[in-house]
Length: 323
Image (cartoon, rainbow, N blue to C red; front, side, top):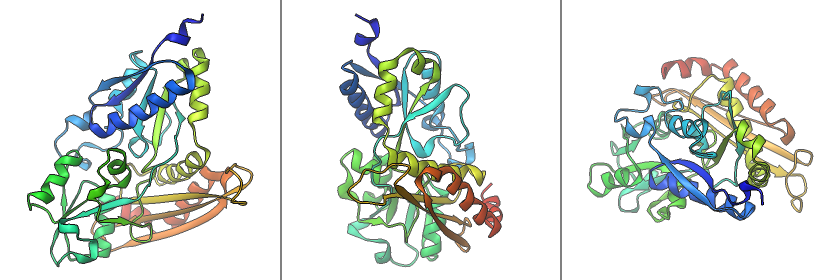
């Protein structure tokens, strides 16, 4: 018997409830596809240890570094990230080997006493650690007091319960995955707020060396990869990369993949992508919003094309404000 057939698949992840829940779903899927046991390898990232604003300590890659180190030093075979946290620049020794089916990518408004965004009184306080969310909320409701916050989901929600904040904005996907979606008082649709590129999607990262020596794991990762998700996030991340903007920039993007025939599974040959994007000033006073539609097989090209249109319309000046 090949030694690999009984060797556990080691899955690196951050320690938070959300991260371990996400990683466990991937571990279970890989175990089912290979017939091998799978186990989690828990790590602590720079982003987990820092106490200041995401923007204040760089933002880009702070939640993925330690997971990547676990893969590269041989403690893990794969790592699971929230895709929106993964830098868009390719890593020399690692690849995103699978993007499983995406959860709802929307932002979740969690208001006090069931309040929606429109229900909040003038000068109400809304908490978020995301410049993208802050800028879009300010564009919709310039009267609100947007407060920068950090912490896990429970910590943020506790600030509503204590009366410290009137609302917080979180990712719908995270709340759904840990079974806390009952706290959502409004799912913000794309016309109200565009999510972060890759939001709601997971990235399963692996080293090229592991993929070369473990054929069963490689095949399982290929099966775990969902084409529609892969194409959509490729377009979104290509746009972010072309804008030279990091994960803390006030940029939102969402791509949807639609088969030409609704009875067919989406493929590069039979599907189109509709990509929407927004760049906004930090104070929300200036917003540039554009969209593009094209062939799913040209996902990255569409992202670059829309980024060029945003830059031509003045997006670079808005992004410069957040630097």
